[in-house]
Image 1 (cartoon, helix red, strand yellow):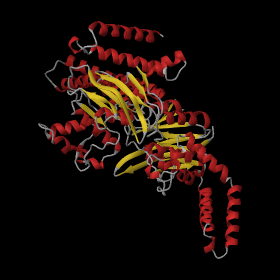
Image 2: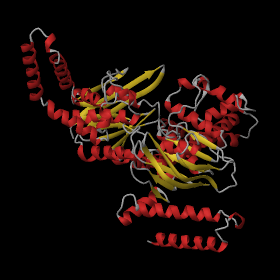
Image 3: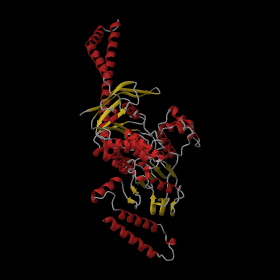
Length: 624
């Protein structure tokens, strides 16, 4: 395969800390490489060195493919002219020469609109015609079509084109930068967290485009494990020991990594046993020599005893030296004990809750500016429910969570919260953190909290030493996420409402969070684009769709996929699922009524008859 990039012995220090150490990387044409590592491992720094924006302290980068054929999506990328509209942002990034020519044409058009003020209008018209000819000859008009096509493919409709870039959402900004890359058609793509802020539909489109349509080479950083599984042909792990290459996606990497760790652990134990055996042999030989020496120097010792020890020592001297050399070889080839990096150490116990239902949403309708998001929606949220709310950006996922919290109020219907319920909220905006407060001070205000215990707790959340004196406003996004979970730790919540809780977290920390949430005894309402997280913890799925009825699925993602494979439908039967939910809600309502709670028109016989009929219909639906 043709090599397009080679990095040799790349080392880099930042603020006195070794970030990259003797990194070796070769990229062949057609590869799709996932650059994997913890937050702070230096992944973005390595990309900037490869792209030529930074110079390493040691080593060199050989760009065999010219960098003008590269395309780079940075993690936090703002165009210089960030006041321009979304359409112009894509144009300016996708083809600088055509954008400059189009800008000149636009300037000439503005002058032509004021021909009365122009001294030589004939020359202006001639100049304008020349510009148009150049633009057409260089493919300007087909380029404009390609720009619009790319934006539409990424879900950026015409209603977004005129919106200033700075006013776009995080997902829309990412799509704008991706659209510019698609149009520029680079042969080598560097993508730093391309999945951040993208909704599920855009994620699937990007995966399919990279795997099936794009013919170039990709080097990307992502914490989305499913994206890595579907796109990557190679995973390169960046760690303190340099860069290690693994074949396949994330799941393949994990299997191989676990195998390596098992082998390393077995070899380490074998070497430890061998080392202890050699040390014991050497110790015994040394005892023999000591006794022989004492016997030889003691005139009162029986001569035959002294001779015995001397003979024994002389006989074993060569064995003693052989054991010493064997120990030296063992130490030289010693395998280190497998060690994992620092891991988040937390659990969310939650206070005990005696009731069954935490929240009841009844006939709820809500919308913004005449745009209806929810129409007559009804459901219960019970103990041990793990509800995952899915859907494209703008479908109302975060709005639904805010309605459950009581931050918003329905236009019709009601959201009934059990008065005893304690709610813990994780917002994707992380706005609940006081930027002027230090991490340590934020804990010391808790009654009974000591500085020693506060430091211990912060250490469990990977804040150590001087980190505890950091102010909230100085924290990275990953650190802010860990701080938000620290607040949940003290909430004593029965219900966790989580809006994109794993954004900005590295994979190791995400996996700890998954384990914590899976063992949480209360209920969870979750919005997340992390498909691994949803797959692991959700037991109820609500899919929101703009201008359409929501789809309920009572089960996990695996069960949903199994049903889809049986019936050949991606999202199941919407009408059937919704009717089943209605029946279950009505049965639950009726069962909640006691005999004394029945009104005059509803006799106990009618009450029982309705329950019986509803259960029969529910049974028929479930049997289909």
